[in-house]
Length: 371
Image (cartoon, rainbow, N blue to C red):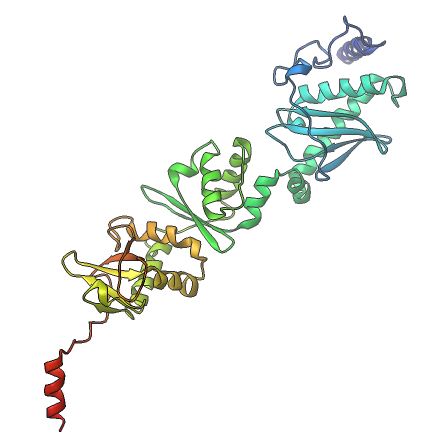
């Protein structure tokens, strides 16, 4: 008896749905943004004037079959909206957009199904109720594909996210009271403090990206940044360095220390004539190394581009590091214009001692001794 009652209830519900869709649309009919029960879609705009413009398809995305020759094309979200194109064969039926992922929203699916039914009219391949089921089934199948097929997931990934992930080669995290992430982007490193990785607005990633790639603005929106954030914090791909291991920053500092041991000190800026030398400013306890020497270390030793120098500067100045001040330009001998130099503590490396300077009398005495 219970089964018969359920069957009757289902039949009544189906009749109500079909009655709701029967006949041409009128002002009294339920609007397209209401579900079969007459409930408004609270996640979607109900007035056409408030709906965002739908971008034209870009050729990207995934085609989802619905029924017969009717298909739906989904492509990466644009401006925090999820666009779609409904087609019949090679002819467009209509474009649509949603502010939430349509495969996760029954309300969006019902609204789009209503639009499809209205657009097809008498040319629909089946009754409205059946077509609604086909649309719902198509989204169920697509959601499964999105979950299990990496190619489908990539096809629905926004361009800004794809650009970042394509360049991401390694992710290393150094846990501490101020945890730091180091993201290898091609041949460049992006150091991300925990406070920036935890942000939900996209200002950080857009600024950091443009700093590394000055001619390639990212312009990621909030949702795109959250996708990047999820990828950069994925336990499956992040390498966590144990606290007792030497950090990458420590290794870089040690390599620079060894590199600078080949530099000869001079006692005045006027004597600084090549980057094989460094000026020992004795009163300040600093050794000024020419930036061309640092650039050679970055490119030849670290295999990083010259644009990586701001990162090295931050490493050397952090936590009372070996560079107590920022670099600056100084007037040095042998150069027409001021040159940029990096200041290091005198005890940072075993710099070569300056060669003794002989005056004219010393030279004369040495000549007589040699006679």
